[in-house]
Image (tube, rainbow, N blue to C red; front, side, top):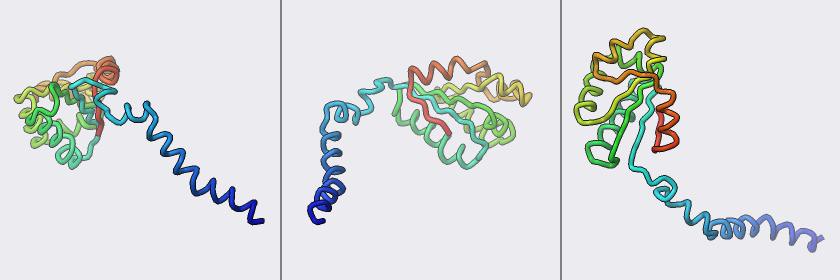
Length: 150
């Protein structure tokens, strides 16, 4: 019985360690650890869809503004899509923040299809947001840039 248990124990204990070592030392694994080699673009798109005001202030706007201010990226686009558009038109503080980002060179887009459903296209344009159909834009952003979403 001991002879049957030993190979079993060996495989349970050592196989995961050996296979992890083999994987971690393979050339493909070593190359993929550096994400700049995977996507060597210095352009960012922040896709904001949430109606959560705290997410807007404490993550979306804070990161987008600071990423631009400290030049972490060469080009930054904030894409306002869906429910976040409605929140933006209802909240003066968020509007002022978006205007400030636009003044500092961040491109702010909104999906016209969504804005028209909410009947807020004109309100978004008054804030300074570029309102247009953005399905193709988003597809190209995904193919060509770094995209994060909230």
